[in-house]
Image (cartoon, rainbow, N blue to C red; front, side):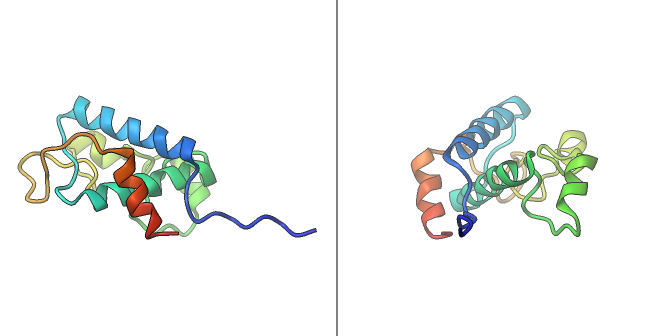
Length: 121
């Protein structure tokens, strides 16, 4: 009996959950998504994939020796401590209006995320 292949992409449930979280958090913190929506889409997909695989939305833009240990430490779980304390988002998901890469959007259509995901599979 063979094991099913591990998906490179997140589940639709986690993707929608992280999209909704990101939109709500951006509005609550008065931050904005990157002017390039593909950056936003890739980060949301990465958060959703980590939520599926690790049980928490670990920042997808960092390298970890031990992802499970990092999840338990919670420092890099989104929103990470630098974001919560200083509005510093390494992933460029939540940007302050004075950031050169900040757009004017606090939401992203699910279709736009699906378009970017199609290039990642």
